[in-house]
Amino acid sequence: MARIRIGRRGPGRPRTRPAQVAADKGYSSTKIRSYLRKRGIKAAIPERIDQINGRIRRGESLCRLDRAAYRRRNVVERCFNKLKHNKALATRYDKRARHYEAMVTIACLRLWLP
Image 1 (cartoon, rainbow, N blue to C red):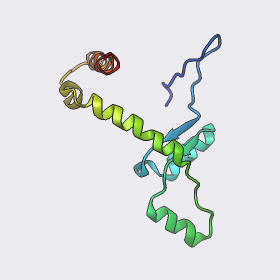
Image 2: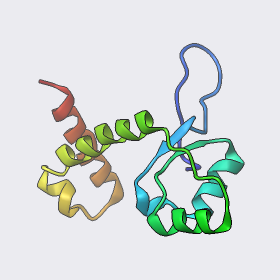
Image 3: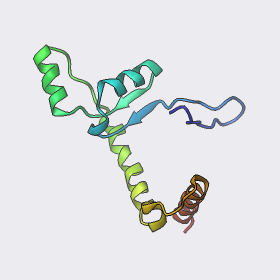
Image 4: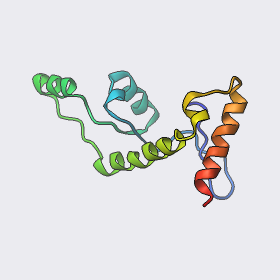
């Protein structure tokens, strides 16, 4: 997350933290949630069943999930799926990182251009 840079319109330095992070249940851990909370980032991550049962057993309130933000995660998933149709990206044939990044750029351009 340290390498994230979100450009701004007009002058000013780029933002270094997103407003919200959406992920699936595999990323629902106390460590990740506390890290996001410390940085002031909202988490759109559904809780696993064992976490929900633990909260109920301890008498804590359940975690609220922004369902609209979680649904938008599907757009990113579909984009990665389209990128993985490129065999060089799916299997990472390239030895060097810069060559792989170039292939990612080319695949993105192929998606973007009609």
